[in-house]
Image (cartoon, chains in turn brown, blue):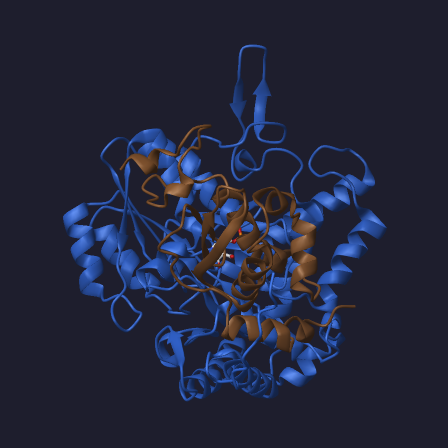
Length: 147
Length: 423
Ligand SMILES: Cc1ncc(COP(=O)(O)O)c(C=O)c1O
């Protein structure tokens, strides 16, 4: 029988109070935002994807309950440095495992918000991304070399 | 005579249980749904065990006994609200179903493009969405009366809206399910009638806590749910003035609501069956009547006074906690509901923490998104009291809120540096 008290174990509160990469990523190439309309949780995920298919940097910002914010911090920390493919293969169940304490179905929604936003951010290139690495890559010299 | 919650608790078997944390249950989520006394549970199982059958149709012993009990429940309900005739009491599935019935049947036949339905910003979604849907069908317009700074609404503001908008319908809560604010139903109804508007009162949060007298209110429609008055789910009451109901077309079509059906068409039967298509909530009506008798035996005035004491204690103590903001007026202007936010702590974390202490409260927008938006909040925590709650439970609520604040407010806890592990 999961005890709700354990949901707020030290590890979770540490991530809540001292999150990993919470803030703006000015050089983001991909980003998306998602909400849990029922609770008002908001998570914004910003990624810089490299040409080699790696997530070079990952940041998040947001507002909401301990679970939504702490789980976002854990996820961002975990996927940074991974490849895009690896991040896409990261399942909802793995997210719940990463979080740790067992959650009731209602609170699982809070925990999975950042995971959902990450998955859509991977498919959401920023139009004005000024990082040239984000541009389409051709077999020849990259376009940026001409300017 | 003040009621003794400790002796009342003995009537409610569920209150003996514990929460999943092992702490004794302090059930403070009564505005969402109340618990049931043994007499209600017994009335329902007695029907199923001894005399249940479908009503109105069968010519046999069980059907006749069920029909008699079902119609006796209608009479109990008539007395509970003070209606003139049983024709004015329609059993619906709940408040939501009752409002939808009025919106479809009365709204569909009385409102057209440009007409105004006036609501307060404090409405439950059940008294907003059916009007938005009606607006989409007919082109009528939905307008809202804003809240004053003290979480009440001034008569002058209501008067001004009635005059300038000339609404066909004014539909409002007798008590807000978030703020707890009690609105002056009889006075607003008088003002609305003088302005030519029909009046619907959403008494979902009124019926459980105060004696209702539809004659004194004089509203055209009054609706409420069974499950909030210690009765079963799946049943509610639509009271309507007879002349109005009589002139309205039926909403749902089917068995039980017809006089005659041919291959060409149908003619509806009279009140109240005209609005009770299909097999009605039979045992639910019987259980509801048992609940109403139970509340009356305790005394609705005593219940109201008891809740007021609890509300006052909770409201005062919560206001004294640093970082707590109460969404609602001072206790003299509200029923047994205290909604609040804690600076820097999400309502869900408050509710989850309180649950570890056995204290059940609701957290979220409580089906009142426009209200929360107007207050600049996404969510709040809500403690709502009923006849079986005790002053000790209020103390436990306050203690647990203090704990939650200390635990979750950023900076309230000693911050630990983590060492992010290298990828
Ligand atoms: C003020 C108010 N109106 C309407 C409703 C809807 O009641 P029901 O869900 O029983 O139809 C509620 C209950 O949640 C309420 O508090």
